[in-house]
View (cartoon, rainbow, N blue to C red):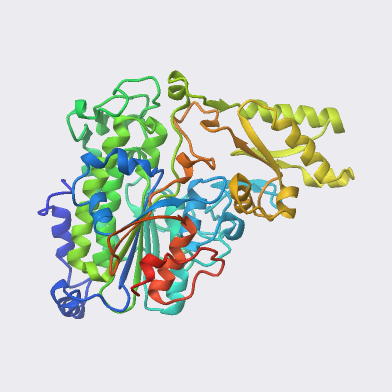
Length: 562
């Protein structure tokens, strides 16, 4: 199934709307709202806002791959819209779930509370993830243990505010990853859909629905996932044209199931893999996401009336492939060239279906990523891997020597230490004293640039630099006690990933932000803008309230024509 063929059987299927599933009134209204009649002029506000989030997309990828992009994908968005050249993430730890929460809430982790993909819950005395919710159930598919909701997001989102302002507005989010779909969806969504890794179906949890909608059931029944799983991933272009990449065979990649060179024969690899999880680690995971997004537009009739709708799409295969192959691999570049073509097809479809003047599209990312540390070292560029296990052992031994043998450290994760505050209080030791001693020890370790304590962050309002980024990452209720900022180029030690992202440096925090459609003009903005500015910009365009914890500001160049 070629996703670029306009005779694509998938698109034909979308057009064969069942009289049983869709009333005749829909057919009549779709004629009234056809692009030729409904989209000749931009209405007072867009009828469909589309958010496209490409996980782990560094800003420099736009420049690096520009000459190989077609005219209808990334280039179309930039040459036909407004590109923010200095868009950035303003907090210390740009992990995936904090990024999504920031996009939809207009706030940093300090306010929206999603401080990491997972953290230590002192009350429950266990590690919790950003979206896992054991009180919910999966309503379809075979992965019944994947139960998610936005229960740990204590603030409203742009989708929530749209529904509060107009109960007829629809909010739909789609991602191969359950956590990404849930965090984008917010609390009042009509549906957050993700890929069931065992069945290959799109599914959701009981938090959002009691059953899948008819259009989604029909899509799942067609088993397009099996068509993708029968494919062989070979380079889109002749392999010798990927001149800016590392050779296909190199020592810096982890690969897929130990295979690290083209071609990737999915049917063979699937035999040793949880079948449809493999799909998420190839460009076809993005293709399958795009297919379902198109189906959602038709099935939910998005953007076809004066009640503005919101569709949020997460392309997560880019992050999975980045982890496995690194930021300089042929596999990663090929993934972006393929995604460029998927975007071209998607934009052509949505402009015809809804009308360019009626859509407002933004494209951004939840983080960038670091380069492979061994590759940097081989180029004589300082970099390394921080030995977090040894650091944790050293800190425990040190605190045992100072205060006596005990469980002084409750948890370590992603450059954050949680001390055993209950024990410290019982021993009548000042918490700040223990934090300071621990920070003074840890900052001396190889690869550590700075060590912050929660006591300092509670008492000081930092307004610039790395200190401000750490301040924006800190949430008093959920964050730990000591926070490490590694040296530039450094990541935590890993043998399962070729790269990582969790730093305040440009390669992790400088991300694309592009606006397109509706009344958006062709501009290149050079002023600094933040990931927190997306939600208030949409609120301003739609003339609704901002999310309740929002600290970002509307981007004037987008809202000026509202």
